[in-house]
Image 1 (cartoon, rainbow, N blue to C red):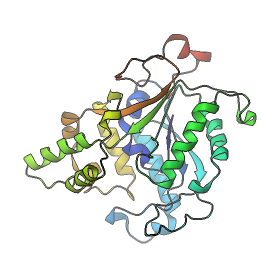
Image 2 (image 1 turned 120 degrees about the vertical axis):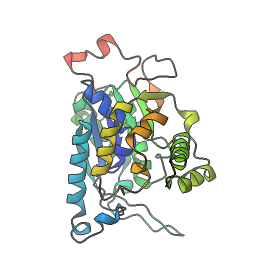
Image 3 (image 1 turned 90 degrees about the vertical axis):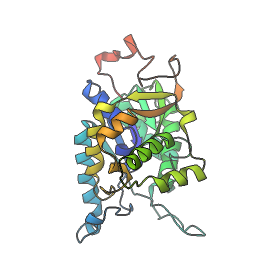
Length: 294
């Protein structure tokens, strides 16, 4: 189970890994916490009448198409997108938005989802949210509560029978070294690269997190599905932008993996890993004759 803040986050963070496990017969579910209503329209082709006025419906349709592209299950948690505040000083967050909800109450709803789906593995964001969007930070906070409490019968007994996930990962979707390799290849091919400013910003912010990565999943065969899922989020993904700038074949050649950080585990799994299910074996994967769940 991957817990994400907005529709489109699942397609830019661990998407090919989810597609790989789904194709191998695992049940894979994404829980999207917010409706994405306050995301800017980043694709000029979608900046047209009828889109912004119906943005919630549009983003629901985009999310359904992305989930279909990846072959995964999907659940909306139902909260209102908080938006990314800008300005100095920052404006207050909108009343009633996800980031302002009591974390314990959000955690109860997520615990209910975990107890129903019974995942062995949970994927979420690190303490920085992947980047410091209020909704991403909230996802991290409530995910850590869920990790600790889903198996505790005294917590939210109304949310179902306790279930204890075995591994917790942070998804690291933006790797500086990958971006540098794709940038160099595009220049070598005589093409204009959209990565230069991103690389500059990453270096200025000391945002290289490769040292934290514990787990690299080889999922190059599923990059095509990842690209289709990204393209499904047409309001958010500009076909001329960085997410889709490099052909799938180039991505497969220079960086065939997706990266994760094992943040907590209830099973022994030597590091580094190449499988999110490493260390989960036998009876643990056959509990109650259920399918393996991620």
